[in-house]
Length: 317
Length: 271
Image 1: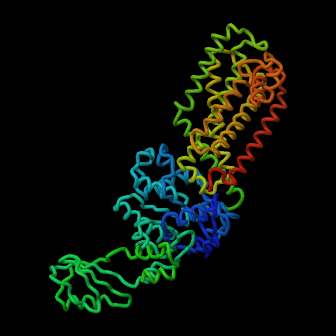
Image 2 (image 1 turned 90 degrees about the vertical axis):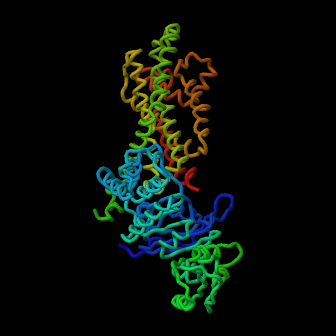
Image 3 (image 1 turned 180 degrees about the vertical axis):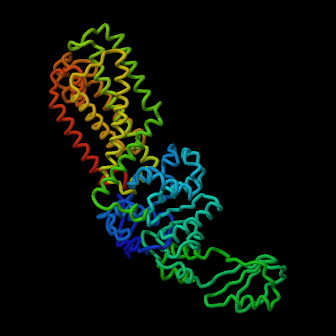
């Protein structure tokens, strides 16, 4: 297998008829085996980028290659590498579940027994085998979403692109999808994910790009990105109520409820010290969690309308 | 099976086989679609044609007597078969393709490695399949009213097939440009139906005054119907059958390449 990146984008521009510049010459590289998040506010250029990669949008200029295959010159090979799960349902609701997946296998040249085998494999994996003879319109929202994942995987793509895969599904199904995607990634499939659930990106992805106004404003590892946050706030549920805010210097603490305390920890400070102070003050902690989604803070800072990335990272910190 | 075998067919033969599988898949999908909705696709043409046979053939036809030396009922049968092929081949492709665009299920095909020529071929073959299915139904019904005789099988089947392909291509181009469902009913209502009715299905062109007769020769359906009638009875009036074949074939080639060019540009599909 070649060592070419799973996805390589160079100088990608898209100007729509009417002059709107959706992509302003972006560069992006996703390595093989990565679990990559592409984030951005609505209208930032995420869907246009995915559309170009999947040949649903005609680029104005630039180069896109999938595992080294140029999407213009080697389109068939490039397309065979990709599986796409779009944001909106895009299958005929009157077709049967099994037919939808098997037909897609056929479009990739898998015929007869091979397409039936692949269809069964992924319908079983996604818990839809029992529904194979039902029309797609009878499926629940979560099942329809899983049907699109089965369809995208039926030809064994090396790069799976999911555009908001868990939008509108309940927590249980979301968690099971996360687990399935982790398995796929561990088995070697490169995954690119766009999502509005930043917790999802933080939980699943190793690397991240944030796109805003048609430009990549951040492209780094999730770990490095989160380290840019200077302060983290811990929410502590206490065993006993407090009558006043304890002195935990050098940490800043706030009492939000009688038995709930918020403590700010700056980058470089030690969590053990927080507990040492709490212990010294005779405060027993029952449970602890992060106050808010850290990635969300960064995302908001990076994509706010006024500033450059440099300024924004400082703002986040 | 090793993953790479699934992903990349190696060699020309493997690529051809993969493309053939894609074509067959699309054709089966299209046939399955019009069979699934048979009360909308197969029954209405059968009912309309039964009415044409009963009213124009059995009831009015008796009073008309002969047309161009043939029993009137006999005279209209080839035109009615061709009329049903034209409308059904066109409607099948325009409706199916536009529905796929509307539901965005076409994206599943567009993201796959299926070449444009295979995509086009699959939809056209679907239209031809419905056109031929309806032609078979109508011919079977006609057999209750007249004795079906074929003067020239090659002309009959050749013109039937070419016409089904030509109007399937027309439906495809219509579907490509359509933005809403109204857009796929405009051409059939305002162009195809008048041209078909004025295309010599129900009368011989010799009956027309000179001006109208001359104007009729600008109607392509005149050539299709006359040539098809020749296949049945060996009679095409003053329409040259060979030239009609060449003209229809030229239009098929032109529409095929126009459709491919539009697909390549992404017209109506890619932004």
